Amino acid sequence: MLSIIEQRQSVRKYDPTASISKEQLIKLLQLAGKAPSAWNLQHWHFVAIYGKEAQQKLLPIAYNQQQIVDASAVVAVLGDLEANKKTDAVYDPLVAAGKMTKEVKETLAKQIEQAYTNRQYARDAAFSNASLAAMQFMLAAKAEGFDTCAIGGFDTQAFMEAFHIPHRYIPVMLITIGKASAPAHPSSRLSIEEITTWVNG
Amino acid sequence: MLSIIEQRQSVRKYDPTASISKEQLIKLLQLAGKAPSAWNLQHWHFVAIYGKEAQQKLLPIAYNQQQIVDASAVVAVLGDLEANKKTDAVYDPLVAAGKMTKEVKETLAKQIEQAYTNRQYARDAAFSNASLAAMQFMLAAKAEGFDTCAIGGFDTQAFMEAFHIPHRYIPVMLITIGKASAPAHPSSRLSIEEITTWVNG
Image (cartoon, rainbow over all chains, first blue to last red; front, top):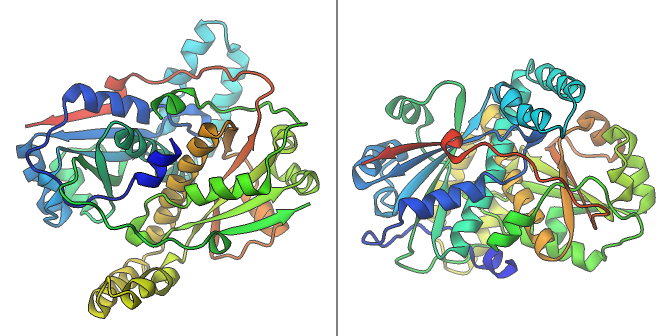
């Protein structure tokens, strides 16, 4: 596992003849969906762009980066701006199974509705929680022998129009997945001293 | 690795007598810092709250959740709202080593400065990229035999004041880390059909 983390690198050159099966991609998306999320609202939605024609459609939207079409598939990770609408779907099965009282569920539902009156909170939560799933997807992919690259540089407006994304969702990143055709260059990292502050005591 | 993903669950009850060494925590934070990020700007900063006195100080800020003090440590994951200021630190070593031309660096620096004129972009990027590192931290922790819980419910304003956080950073989540004192309940997940849209072709 730790070696998977060490070995994962952003790959921008893919073998265009390699492929990923739909079953394999589903398995990775299921693993991604096991990420934690605030109130377990699972603020992610994945758009699996699977097939060369669909990838060609995405190409200009991602500023013609060749990896979009050379990769075996592309997954768009969306964040859910209205994750509060999932409250019943997430909690009702627990209430039905006797694992949560109706009263606890109602208390949680009120907290959630209160939080979602704040649009900035909704957006922050969408970006944060969807990214937890995105990272889990990339690590699961590496463990299964696939390479990935997270892409923030694309025209989100054009993406939403071309792929008919409801305004409930906000595009967070694209992730290309496939087999590297050339090893990625290791990227420089800030030192642990630069990225950490200790509060001891 | 896939079993680590399957087994990681949000643990809210910790063994208060368990501990994590500073070296172990540094190792996990270093692994977290290997997450990908937009332009490799590494938009995360970790505040390691290490020691019972420091954890007690955090307790009321996190609404008196017992896990804050029972955990072996707490890591606050901050997002960097001014990650553009890292451009030189990230790219100058590559230029010095002859791995990137000065012209390419300047082009990237201009793109980055342009993006950071948009404050919403800066905030979205802070939440998204810091969360990638957070997920990697939680999985690395599980692989090393520790349990974690990501916490969104805390008073971010009070946190920034109590721990003297510069306004450059925005708190994204707290993560408790330690040894579970009771097994976590598996949480319900939406089905793969509910979380995925396929664009085939």
